[in-house]
Length: 246
Image (spheres, rainbow, N blue to C red):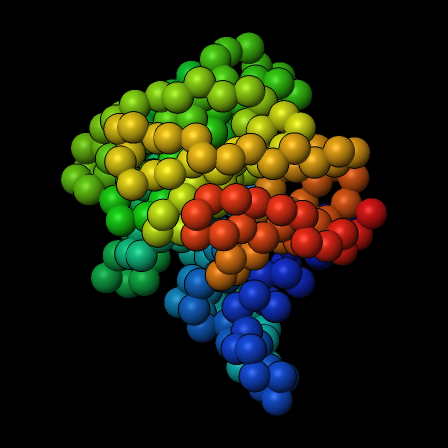
């Protein structure tokens, strides 16, 4: 419960304007949470994963929530990520692509099936990145980063799988993909999705990174041991700038 509260707090903080005079967070856009979160905010709606459903709540005046809709899906839903007009849901067996219909309710569009594993997913410009992990999960399988083309959202296709070591959460910007791997954070140049190129690996002594929230050239990094602020340069170099919680 403490971790859930912390992630919701971070999502709200990162969604606010930097003007400190604005004390009311704007909940009308897209909530900025980590890739392992089970909830997100899109278009004045809170979307929450249950084991086999996606539940929608309208955010009304005063920050209250009113139930709107439930989308029944398969069991094993794990993570949720909003990207433009689509909502991507990672499960232990697939990545699901959803969108809002004419009644503003989520509906199923398509899915990409993968090996049974733990599966967070992020996306940008029709390309999704999904880490598949068996370490620490109740599954046995390959540990990879799947790159998926969903520009034709009704027929998503695997571009390529890249070997990884115990990948957890991930995030991206226009240039780089950041992946929590065992013992640190790996940074990839993602200018060519069919040829991800490693540009840096930040080893963090005493911490095991599991998820990331990106803002500008800084990342809030949640680890098994605490919370860090990690910065990076346009040239592709990372450094720990502060320990927030240890």
